[in-house]
Length: 334
Ligand code: PBG
Image (cartoon, rainbow, N blue to C red):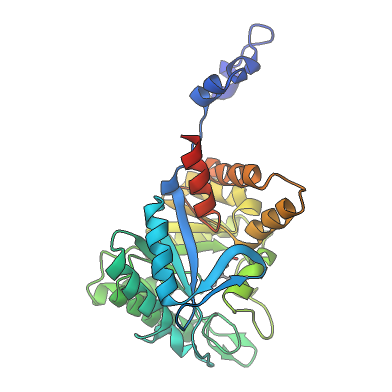
């Protein structure tokens, strides 16, 4: 018999509604409480000055130039959100994604500027090539194959330039084999042994990334990401992915997307007990925004329910486009 069964009496001795009768009682028995400390806010950096362009598929999400990103980071920090994650859209793309590992690349510039202005804000950088390659794939393409080993060497170089610029956490999102080890090795060789790796450990080949690809201009020109990102039908395989990343040196493991993969999130947290992140991705955000705009759902209520559900399932941190809105909501509740 499990604990739940032993502790439940029979009606009418037991009435589970008793502790739900008032707001005060409900707050006393509440098991999961969201906090602003849980949030990591994604930002998209573009070249130029004074650029702030809304992403058409993502209400209130903007592509911003470095100056605007810095202003945004000041605001984010003052709202009590501890961290941002940066995605870069380079001036020019090529076959090998050179912009990704250019020490003067767009993300590297943004990190330097942010760390100068708001040093306490935790800056996470997404490490991938898809925003930087002309074909939109996450690595080097030979024939019709997205090759693994050559690509991870470039991802490692990208990670190193991010760390050199001042990034606080490196977050590889490519899903190639061996990338965490390659990144850990190059960071350690260059005295960045204390920079943590947050690996996108169980990242699925998902239709929910649609709006992000508009924001990051990273839609593949041909083919798809199914040869490296995971099949949505698999759960045991996700445990192997996470185990491998931990062996290779991941400090924080991520499950992505969040909502349709709460079972994975739960298992990862239960089985490994590492700090665990969930990425509440662009499609999850845009669906709520679109439905709320149409008056079909109460957007704020659904936002809080989603984020609470993700935390309840096991997330210690949530990467979410809702971060600012949810922080404002939490402030109003106090
Ligand atoms: C790859 C990357 C993607 C996302 C984060 N990092 C897109 C992809 O794998 O195609 C998606 C995030 C989102 O949908 O919000 N650099």
